[in-house]
Length: 95
Image 1: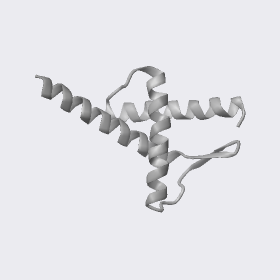
Image 2: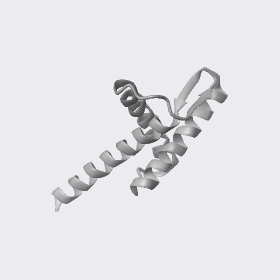
Image 3: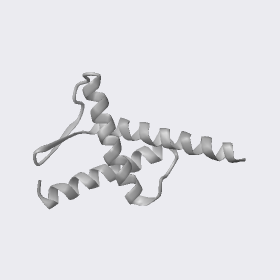
Image 4: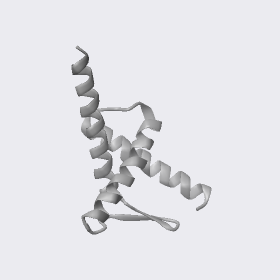
């Protein structure tokens, strides 16, 4: 995988992570946080899709890698929702 392909994948992950943060209404802090959410959410979404034998919806090919955009977005939304719930629960417990 070339440097350009890696940068394109990171840009897609950043956009997906930012979209997930926007939809949930919880931000982890800037574009780096959104990129991390996108990468981890992509792994979660890919794992869920494979475990449940779900079809590829809206695949994007970058070099030799294929990203399933819908499952990446859903995985990122699940991750941000979980992190939001954990942070909310922790802040309520401290009061």
